[in-house]
Length: 245
Ligand code: BGC
Image 1 (cartoon, rainbow, N blue to C red):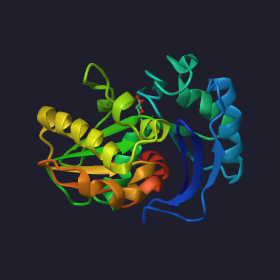
Image 2 (cartoon, protein in one colour; image 1 turned 180 degrees about the horizontal axis):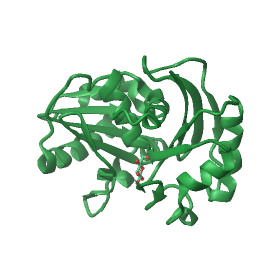
Image 3 (cartoon, rainbow, N blue to C red; image 1 turned 120 degrees about the horizontal axis):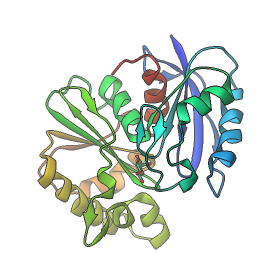
Image 4 (cartoon, rainbow, N blue to C red; image 1 turned 135 degrees about the vertical axis):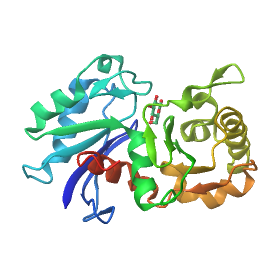
């Protein structure tokens, strides 16, 4: 079964048709820059643009980088506050003319990793953390998602953790991989104390460069890079339309 998955991120909007039985993109993904300021009115045409690359009447799965409760946006730390309270599922459905399911971006990546990647067949408490523009989290208990955990906004050294350890901060501050790894370690150690996970999966854009920083991250919990890397959000978005999580 093929379903279109679209991942709205703080820096790019990426989409591709996904084989939801294999957990793989069936063609190369399309990417456009996330417009700035990232208001709903600016982002919607970009979303329509990406979705328009593949015309079909099928449902579409879309991720959003904030809290999404039953299709309604509850937070938008790295997009415009105009998103707050918007029924994104209804608005996207109206704009795309196809039924749209909306879920948090990290939750979507987690869903894909649990089914096809590093969390496959892992029981107990699994936490996926994405390091990109922000820090996203997806918590699974015996394979079942606890949505909207938002652990990127835990307080660390008196500030929002994602302002200390996201990949955007590494980039903006010109941090070396080793210096940034120290921040990631600090953050993960904090999360570990609160949740005691059995496995941590690192996703987001940096997962494909895990060899540069992961060896420097020393924590008690096993930490592995995401297998689907930066495509996990697109795959999870598509899976969400089928209720397979
Ligand atoms: C948002 C999360 C999101 C994460 C990654 C955070 O700022 O609050 O909902 O998952 O960024 O995009």
